[in-house]
Each structure stands twice: as structure tokens, then as C-alpha cells.
Length: 98
Image 1: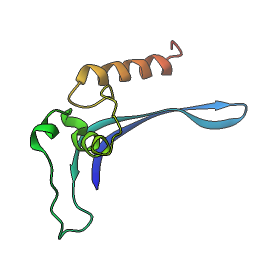
Image 2: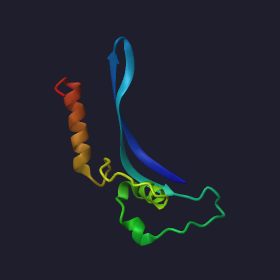
Image 3: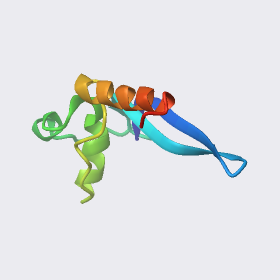
């Protein structure tokens, strides 16, 4: 089981008299992996694990072991420029510029 720690960024708008989420973005900070059964040991390839981004390393490792490719372009603290762009776009949206 993976446990992810992230900041959630949402944009809410009122359209046609109803509020709704128009953007939901996670900024990944770190994560861990633990067995669901504490008596189990996990066999993890350290070299393969090290090949993934640090902000969501286990979240990439587990699905790819099952054949699902994870995106590598998600915002995370290991890429501060992506976070700055996200906050900049949100600031422009709040000002009505975006």
C-alpha cells in the first residue's frame, strides 16, 4: 500500500447558479510504501525504484510493476518550476486574466 503526501490545489467556479470544481491538482511531496500485512516483506528493486522521481517514486513503481505507465510530468516538490507555474496560472485565474 502506498501512502502519498500532497497539497491539493482546487479552482471552484459558480456556473449557472451551481458551484463546482473546475480544476483539481495535486502537488506531490513524498510518499511511502508499507505492506498491508505487517508480517509481509516487500521485494523492491532499489535500482528500478531510484529511476523514478522522488516526489512520487512508489506511486510510479507499484503500477508499473503491474504494467501501467505513470505520467512523469505531474507537479512535485522535486520540480519547483512546475509548482511556480501552477501557482502563477492560478494567480492569473484569480485576477481574471487566465
